[in-house]
Image (cartoon, rainbow, N blue to C red; front, side):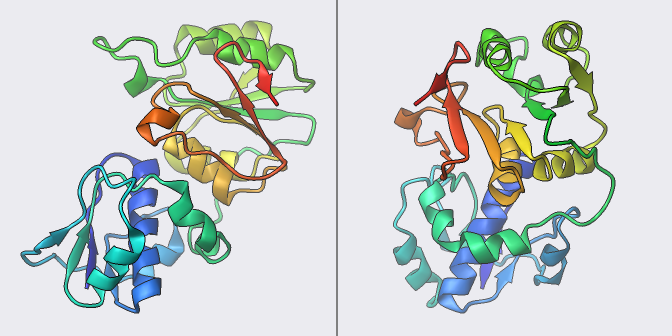
Length: 247
């Protein structure tokens, strides 16, 4: 059996669930994982308490050999945990995995093709003991270079200075509600600006956007840490700390 242990918030949980599901599909071994309420396909997975397991994925598992763990799963119980945040694990399985991790129907804000949806992750990046993980000018510079009618803002901290300035000076409209509404809004956005966030990444990777702006070397998303989490495709453009679009 493949058991999944969640750590962190929804974006991290999707990486953990998705990685366990990939191991399960490749090995033919059932997976046991708590369901994720926004995603109906996760309800059908066995959920039981894991026994004492010897084979446990290391917490920093971005660079493990996935085939080795497929073979382990076929021989013994394993526990998936930590941060399997390596996009090469997921890209070969995108077609079927996206179908399993499509959010259920429900409330969201529908953006037009003339709008742009912006995700701002702020709360746990900018605590009392943390330095700025990405500069404000990254968003200001990017928005200044784009054409759009409204900037629809999804964020975990609607009262901060960045949101106030975006509303005042960048045609911003705050639409954040709750985690389900906000994920769906990002998922269905035709044009999307991401923050360095796994929540953003999953909504963009599994979603409908035909135009995506992704931060590069910002926040914790750095190549040297293995957490750059790049997206593939000609519809994806990267922007730097000044908001300049990279070619």
